[in-house]
Length: 487
Image 1 (cartoon, rainbow, N blue to C red):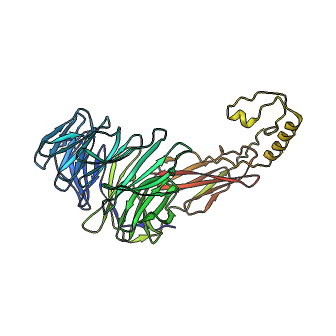
Image 2: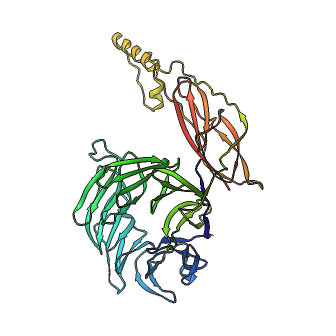
Image 3: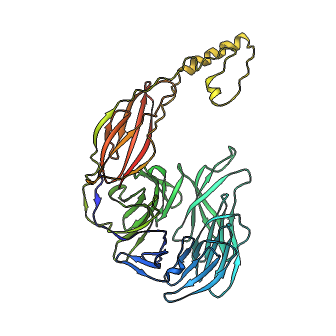
């Protein structure tokens, strides 16, 4: 059982329709329509500018000495504590601004990029496809194309570019700059059997020399974090991989069953944001966790040796920021003692499979029928019929695995005692060529809490993942996940 971190407090929110980003020094900058621009630290929040600049379609970029605000009318303003002035006007809605060295870049809703400085100079970045996202590092901008292109830019000039072949479909991102300035980018090739590139790969780029290294990975990457020794790659289903400098994969482990959203390093502690939880990992082991009221979106260190975690509630879209001490006191977690109060048997229904693999002349194969392929009846020679009989006999020996259906993730309200009764229903699970003979509901601590198709459990406030494992009458098994959040 994972201990709970106790030194955790909310320092901001929940607040509606806010935009935020991590500041270079510490804390977060936030824009909200009710109070304009503010800064948030572990001590609380401070107002920074006029609420009139805020709005649902407003973006901003905040550094330690510079703050820029972009609006849906295409105007970009420079903001100070007492005033703001128009700096740039572009043709369409500004969707993102990033800061460089004494300059900035603005991305509009059409996927076009404009470079500008603070003295009135500007220029459109050419020779790039439609851009989905941008990220800066010093005087370098990296643009991620909608069709998998990667572009490295100084001011408004493309220095390096990499675009997929015309017959190849790719996606690009996330990306991360190492301390040396080397760009690390995850790339996924989505089509083409003749593709010479691995399906999932991590590329290392030097801004001046171009591509310097490619490493194949065995999963899609959702986030990454660079360290002096290498880079951590977060993936779906809680998978975390470490690539050492040079591309060698030498550590891999699972945090939980949910997609890893954010990775942060604090001294010797690896901090992981996954679903509504924050985990602390030391020496490859989870040492603590705590729960927030949203999904982690970013981390920031503070001068008082604490960490801020920003999160967004996927239902209300509200933002909250928590302050915590990664080296703080922990206590045992008692919320995961599930009370199974009623079980309801669900007998699986045997499917009509007689003749499924028979191939008599003039009859359609059920397998081909499911694939919507038309089979034309023809007269077969005697030796061909014998061959089909042999294939039919062999096919009957093949056991297709079952299909596990645990249902959709859910969020429910607790009663006045802080608990809720939830039905976990796996009755939609099935076996395509037999029947399901065994059900197992397994909690986050790998305990079997139920052995029937549907169970009712009493659980407390928090986020609770459950795994359904079904086994068919020939011994094959399959699994499905469901996460229940009780508020």
